[in-house]
Image 1 (cartoon, helix red, strand yellow):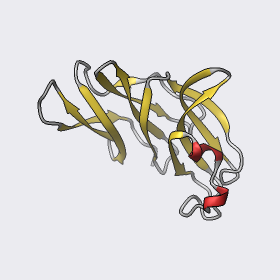
Image 2 (image 1 turned 60 degrees about the vertical axis):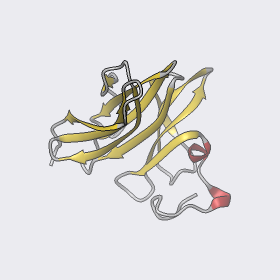
Image 3 (image 1 turned 90 degrees about the vertical axis):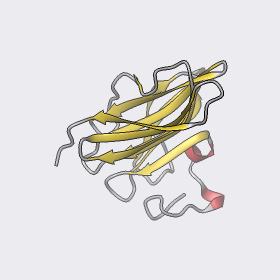
Image 4 (image 1 turned 180 degrees about the vertical axis):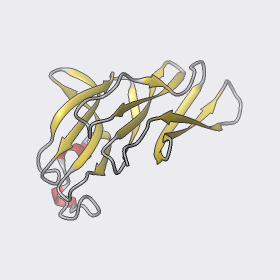
Length: 161
């Protein structure tokens, strides 16, 4: 559990979401508010899920399935205006593709996932940061035996200021 908006976690009291495979937790607007994405199973459906906590991670609510069970290595960021962006990769054999999804209402609802990479390659380690024009997503991509190339793409969203 964290008593300081997620800056420090006591090992013996870590939030349930952080024990999940590939979990990412970010602070919300107030000190007890947290947002997270994690690979987990809800009602028998494994996938990448968004969850929110209003009590510092003691309990988690608002489950939204962002991607299926092939999703891994997620990242999540929250802008000061409450908009959230999640990125992840999905594997299909030797290929992997990077995706994103955006919430305009502090996680209340999520738009349909969009592609970052075009497919036909190995696209991994997606990360996302807030930008004036929306969000910038970054990932590594390799075609065949080529060297990995750092890619970037703007996810355009008009932030509320």
